[in-house]
Length: 455
Image (cartoon, rainbow, N blue to C red; front, side, top):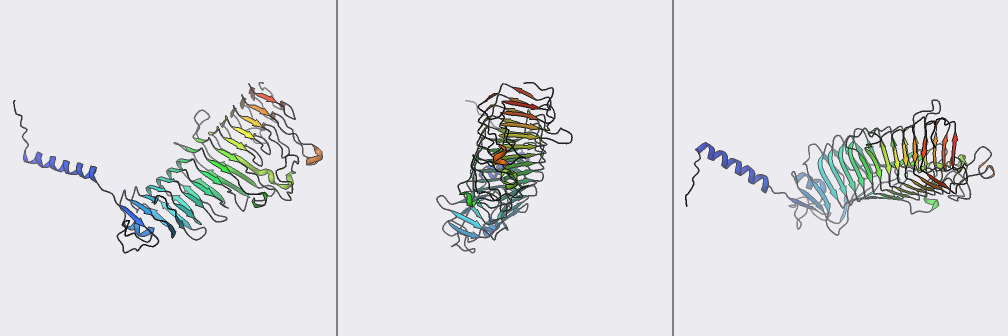
């Protein structure tokens, strides 16, 4: 057998040795797990048997890629991470334990400013606000719980990217907004979370998820979440006339096109978001259609204002005070394959500019099931368009059981129409095709000042 020899010069051999050393370092780089316990001591080594006492001490000790494990108990401190902090840190609760991070009401309980690659798992946050700001990226929360004091937000995302909040619980929050996404934020995902009994004490404008001023590239996705109430009538907010509330609120956003929307709400369940109006002794009684002076009609599942490229699909909306979707001056929306049942007003309501009759078309409304909506007061059609301009398509929807109020129950100036589909007041060029519209108290399809339409 022939033997083969490879000869290296001294310089080549030194270069090869150096490359092998760097390769070994890259593949064998170790990370450290630090432990924290309220009964620990910051002079300890941060091991499982010798834990630190504070989270801030563990952050001080950590390097890139390390993990920080919180043992059971309450940590009365805030977590601050910035562009000066280690990257790719993981914070997690010890398996089977329930660590709580708490601070004074309204203060940041966790603040990420320019932080990179932070993952937080199975930790409860109380009283304070979680802030993700100033070009932070790759920030994730999984299995966490959030509870904020009255009048404050729970999570704020501003000017940050790649934020993932999944399988978390937002509990009993009396906030201004639950999750707020503003500034130049992109690639934000909220999925598999539960939102329970969330509302604002000041309902002038409130939302569980509030999205404003976004022009996303990768997009914002809110998927497979459950929003619901468990409390009694007396525990719910009173919404005065002229005020507004929406479970999901989108404002001044541009989310792509109708064929490729990048603000997407899909697979969510919204139940029992029913609010009280002033002097409301007949709360949520379908036999009593409330007057507008009581204000309670303002609770929507989705409020979309001056926005485009939004997709609302495969959601289940049941028992909300007002509209399933209330879209104002919004275009290139895809509202499809949703279930709207027992909404106080219309299942889907599109409204444009009253002066010009434009600004709420074209939009695609298809494959939705709308039943027994409109028990509140006027404007009760399953799908309503008003002042929208030309180009809306209403196709293949199933609409039944729409309510029609009478003057004796809502006053001489207000009435319910109970139509299946209404194209009203400067909504020309509407295409209405393939719908099943049955057992409604008003007309099946009503057209008013909507010329050049196709039915």
